Amino acid sequence: MDVLFTQDYRPYCCRGLEEFTTNTQRKKRKQRKNYHVNPYLQLRSTKGRFFKDFEDMRSTPHVFQENYHMSPHHFDQLLNVIQHRLEPKISTRPNDAYDISNTRRHVASTYRISKQRLGPIIEQTCRAIFEELKGSFMKPPTKDEWIEIENEYNGLWNFPNTIGAIDGKHVAIKCPINAGSGYHNIVLMGLAAADYRFLFIDVGGYGSESDSQVFRSCELGRALYGELLDLPDDTTVFGKNMPYFFVADDAFPLVRRIMKPFCPSRKGVRLTDEQRIFNYRLSRARRCIENSFGILCARWACLARTLFMKPERAQVIVAACCTLHNFLIKKCTDIYSPPGFADYVDIDGIVVEGSWRIRVPDNSMFNTSITQQIQNPNVSVGNEIRNHLSAFVNSIQGSLDWQRSSVFLD
Image (cartoon, rainbow, N blue to C red; front, side):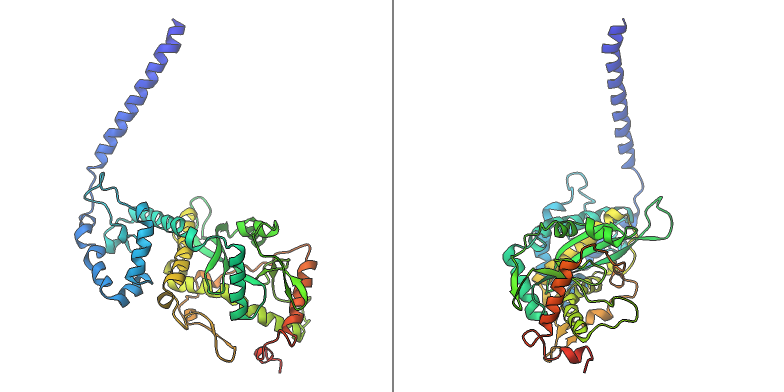
């Protein structure tokens, strides 16, 4: 009897319980269909902003560009890339499916979408944008592409062997549930090319972590310290073999692959004229990451304020903004970053600040940065490379006509 109970009756009871649970869930789902839906939201397909004026915007290019930072043609290109990821479920909700062209705007009420539904729509769209575009617009450079990047840096900003400018910014988010009070932030680490594209991003390091931990734990930091990047072989600069490297500010370590400015060894000690000239030359190249972040914040308003969402959703949104930034820099620069919007060099070689600077609010992501200096126990190799570069930019062969006056030495 016990054997029969164990082998036959108990499995039957379990099956009965499962059937009961399934039937209960079906009843609940059926009941949910009868819940009240706000009449205002029910009119989305006839009176929502998309259905009322989207086509009017398309026929007025300058209005469309003000709203979407791109032309209708490039909007359609982007839509075609991600469309298969965002097809509405017509078979299950034929009368309430949202159009896939209607998922970029934040203001739910103008599109007659409930705020509860808008959040998942934004996250789904941003994830599709990032995952579909990153392979074409943020893929790791090959050796030949690294050399092209170096040629651009040297041609535009007069700093040899530079293959990117690196920096980190803090994106403010509302503190997660059960994480205390106030505001938190996540870290966006970026590497920029000479044309302000992002070559690499890492989003998600928590602001509570030390800056050293954020950099060393991100994919780029691990690859750099492990010499795992597919970089070109060393090349001759001023009679000596020199590696290709990234430029950064003083928060980053001085290593073989990262060059940063000279800093006084102790308080009250001034830098030499040669060191100040080197810092000026390096800062010209480092402006690329500053401009990348600046253009990003000026064009994507969500980064100009605190993100009221969970960290996982914030990461996806920030990554999508960076990927769209690359897409628009390549596809329609004249609209997204027209002449004079980013920093540029005039005929006398002087850097003129771009107009994006007046469009970035004081409390935006752009005005935060990594500040704690990352300590590196072995800086001898980095020091040797930096000293040689300093000698080069101060030599007859490597100097610029305007560099001394630009750092107010004369």
